[in-house]
Image: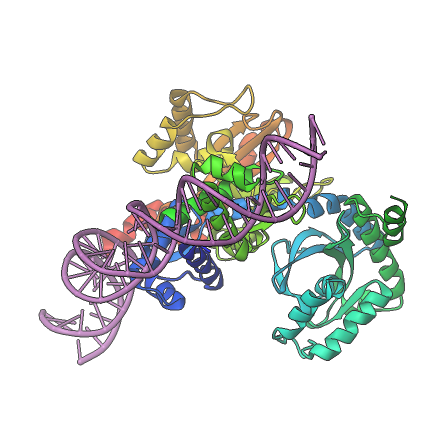
Length: 260
Length: 260
DNA sequence: AAACACTGTTCGGCAATAGCGAACGAGGGA
DNA sequence: TCCCTCGTTCGCTATTGCCGAACAGTGTTT
């Protein structure tokens, strides 16, 4: 582990959290390093355009190269590339917005967003990070994670975003079990009041979970009478997408392994 | 300048260019460092989720945290935040797609993209990086840059993307002068054949250029009979957006300064 | 009005640390 | 089956990054 690089990354995190930017002194304080140390790191990051310095206030802020790199990440992302067509299909079939997400630490990162076919202004949520336990995508992924990883995530603190957020590990564990049983996960106002989600996990060619795809929208439309119909559409799309990534059906994989 | 951090950034650049990821050996070669050095840097970046290692091939690629940080950059970006409303207005007024961009090194980075009101499938170009001399946004920005900076950009190599790309510094300089005179810049198939652009610079509260806003679309629609009409719309929107950022009109700024 | 407190910044010396060479274990291709 | 190449680990050396102290500029308070 290279200490200075780790500190540089920490700086990016700090700057990402500080909406109006942060000064050298503040950065040094948060990292617990001397001011000149923070300064040298910031100057190096600035040279790479990862941070930018406000000409007037002298404060530092995240830089444009991060957007470029984030975009490069998306373009090299296989799940995202394959999901574009399927997400559009699911959106037009259900009439709802579709999200595709991956797990990054304890957050779900939205890597693709297909808008609702007929809708007013919708803001693009690609790049948004949501705590895993507050969204359907996150539950769908964690539900099928290997036991130790799932246990580790359940042990970590589970902050509440709304009154409906599940913050009890045991309760959440049961919901994950039910998601495994039904093949899809549900969110009901746990991230934002009135918003709901329905999602199913997507597997890659190794059989490991690569991410999840699902619907996002108001509770009334997603969890109403046609909920099971929507769930079927989500699950089918997730299965097709997994196939696209080279993952056979679990049964088929077993059969091939047995035959070889 | 912190050497190891600079190298880490260089690694991100290398990984961003290698679509299928790169191995430790390849990274070490490109940086001109020993293999264990590259390895230590990669592991540190991996711990911060800036890079991810493929579990099977062992190769490294960009990580999800970059998307998160890129998004954080956008959210703290004042020009982008203010431009959303104006871009939508310009799109519906002209019936064309609208881009908002900033200069990052010698590339223009698209920080906002308002879709054409009535259009078929359009792909989102936020995060895309275009060489400044091949797009209207870039020319609009560079045209009003301080002399030394503009000169430096004109001295740098100007790669050709299409047959129409201007690669001669003198010729390009004249076009920038004409952009200064008319208040808007034009691109005609210089980045991609058949695509055109019309853009005007946006100023921040210090009076310096913050970026540019403009239209993107097929040559036939953008540079046809209604070209001057579109140009007026772009220029007006850019002016309003500049106002939003706290920049008075040049005349007004002078007046205030004289009065104080 | 003047001293203050705060900012971002530069300099030089010490030692922690990052970088390298060499060796290891594993995987794939011939 | 052998061999080549890959990603990875280990320990030594001196390079390099880190810190204390001091500098210059601003906006604020007394």
